[in-house]
Amino acid sequence: MNDTPPAAPLIVTKDLKKIYPMGQHKIEALAGVTLSFAKGEFAGLVGPSGSGKTTLLNIVGSLDAPSSGSAVVMGQAVESLTHKQAARLRNHHIGFIFQTFNLLPVYTVYENVEFALLLLGDPPAVRRRKVMAALDWVHLADRAKSKPAQLSGGQSQRVAIARAVVKEPGIILADEPTANLDAENSHGILHTMEKINRDLGTTFIFATHDPKVIQHLRRKITLVDGRVAADEPGERA
Amino acid sequence: MTLPKLAFKNLLGAGLRTWLNVFVLSLSFVLIIFVRGLIEGMNRQAERAMIATEVAGGHVQHPAYDPYDPLTLTDAHGLVPAPLADLAAAGKAAPILIIQGTIYPEGRLFTVRIKGIDPGQRVIDVPTALLSGAIPSAASAASTAPPTPDEIPALIGSRMAKTTGLKKGDTFSLQWRDSHGTFDAREARVVEIFSTSVQTVDIGQIWVPLSLLRELTGMPGEATIAVLAQGTPPPELSSWVFRGPDYFLADLKSMVAAKTVGSSILYTILLLLAMLAIFDTQVLSIFHRRREMGTLMALGFTRGKVIGLFTLEGFFHGVLAALVAAAYGIPLLAWIAKTGWAMPGDVDSYGFAIGDKLFPTYSAGLVAGTTVLVLLVTTVVSFLPTRRIAKLKPTDALRGRLT
Image (tube, rainbow over all chains, first blue to last red; front, side, top):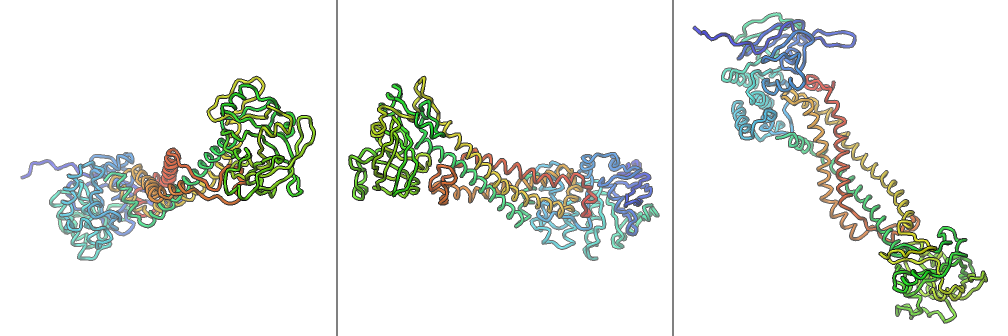
């Protein structure tokens, strides 16, 4: 029997709403989402386009602010953060993986991964160790000097994973990470992310409607019209 | 990697676009320095020539003399005051007697100023030694006859020669009025035609020996002005008036200032063209790199840091341009400064004492000032478009949209 009290959730959203003005109309992207995520979760927000997955991910990632409600991430209320505080939260605690990889084209693989560490102020030797460790995780240590243009889609996404994981964040948010990848590459990067989740305890939250991703999830939250329609264990639970 | 390193890497990563901008900006650097160097060189050259040939250490003038009013010449002569005469005897002053006259070369009439000057003077750089009667060059002696005792040896400048059609060795009638107002005339012979960039000792001027002019006009021991040698302090005189070099250079300086304004417009246009390229690049950059900005923000860059990064990229355009400009500009401009810049034939119409060639002068202040100016303007122009980033939402940037 385990007597350890349950850890406080990393992310808590309460009645989270996001409304976008669209001309004279308003679009309600999130209509009162209440959720919590614990450390080490491998969860996914699933649902059709326009269901609010990316909006929720953006708010949790402090890239956007809610119209009402609250989102507390790593103990910080996103809605009350200044731009600088939000940037600091992202820099220290949140890693992002994007559908289009978003690698910086003029930098090498090494530099792209190192980029995430620049603002943390680590000394060069520490940065080098961390970057090479992250590249080892994604099996791209031998491509450290390559430019993004020289990589395949799967390799590029693995660099993006390395960039997200290199600063050892508590949370990694992945927005449609497999949308531009074939099945083999999709499974490859999902296995990598599962391994990072398992070995480092990093919380992963996906926004996806890709069945390949869904079949790896341990928790599946279905959003419909900005509301949580279902919150259930995933296939890997 | 620090922010400057990132900016530099981004700049080099942009490839040809960067180098085209850098080249255009470097051209502006070199041309601005060249044009300003030309103006500065023109200024100094003209000033040096005027001081050497006409102004020297300043003029002590008869109180009735007004260089801008020929009618004053009738009365503007008098005995050279003793202190001035002493300076002249010591070679530190050159008295000049100026009277109005008329010449009749080949039957035509020209009003002139006849200037009597001591042929042995060394105060101004006019070859007055040729008026002493001895023709110095053997070639000259062979080709022209010296003036007879009845002829007045006359020295004229090349512009005067061109205007009157006179050549070396030519004789012409010279008419003047003596101290009593009586007309007198005699044949004069051109002993030499000298070349000078200073028009005011050339156009409409005929130089003759002072002692002869005094004798012909009945004005013994008299003069209109006395030119002081450079560095000679003006003597204390109660009647005659001292005019320092600044008085004579005022017109030149105002003309140079006018030319400076004209050239400023030229290099402002040059600078604007270069800045347009930088501005355009920055605007395009911000438009094309929205997703990159979103990524930077997602990685934890504040908007201020993103603005700083893009502004630094623009600033480095200026730094690279300065280096490129130095690479080809220093040897090029040094070569022009050494060999001179050939002036067009109508250079006399500029009103400057320039000469056939202009030697640009590039001071350290000019180079440093231009560099600072270009870098400053480049930075400001680079910063202006980046202000848009301040309004950019990270989510919009990640979608490739501008807020």
